[in-house]
Every structure is written in structure tokens, then in C-alpha cells.
Image 1 (tube, rainbow, N blue to C red):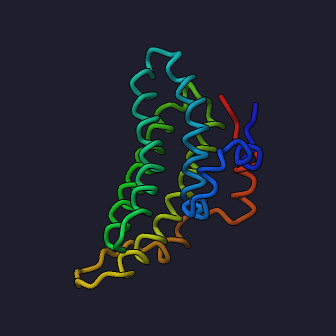
Image 2: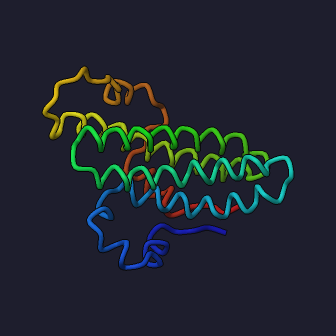
Length: 173
């Protein structure tokens, strides 16, 4: 069974889609990933060995979206950057939980989720430095994330066609 991003978007309530936050790709994708995660954690809870993994995974996935939402609503760029950094940490944590759950979820499902979450993480890596410099009146040493420097080193960098394939073919366990 597969879930399609376009079909999924039609199921999202207008109250969510009418919010300006919906324009943010990282937000839309993080909300989609947590919905996919619902199916994944349901499967993980069926195996006693991954019962704890399922709870950790679902909390981490929900935290990506929650921190993007919280950060978007902050008044200063520094505050937004801080919450986007929390979202980035949760994205990285989620990938680890998917890797650990791959034996129950299946390699194809785990790989799909890891790639999709990696795309969200890369979006966040681009947003964070922009927000750090936006609206900040107090100078502080900036954190070097190196997203642009690392792009060439990432063999799984997703071009728009790869992202489209991930969104069209979101396997369910």
C-alpha cells in the first residue's frame, strides 16, 4: 500500500492549509512524515522488540513539525532559528529510530522515510542560518552549519525529481 502526498494534502483541514505556515515546504513535509509515521509506529508496536522504538519514533517525528510551528510563530530570527534547530535535532533523531526499526518496517519503508526526513533536515539547514541573521539586533558568533559546503559530499542529495518520487510513492508497512 502507498500514500500519495497530493492525495494526503487534500485530506488536510482548511484551517491548517489556510495558515501562512502552510506555505513552508519543511512544515508541509514534516506534517506528512508524521502522518506516515502513524502507520509505521502501529506496525512497530506489534512487535514487542520495537515497542519502545515506536514511542520514541512518534515523539521525535511529532517534534519536527511542532518545533517548526513554534519557531515560525516567534518574533525574532534568533528565536525562530533556535526552534528550527530543535526540529533539525528531532529529524536526525527520527532517522536513527527508523534505522533501528527497519527490521520490522522493512528496508524499503525505512529507506523512504530516512530519505524524506533527510530532505526536511536539509531544508532546515538552509533556513537556520537565514533566520539567525534575520532580525537579530544583538551580535553573536554565528554557528557554521556548512550546508552549502556539504552538498557535494552528500551522495543522496535529492533533486526535485527525487523528492517528487518520494512524495508519490510513500510506502506503508
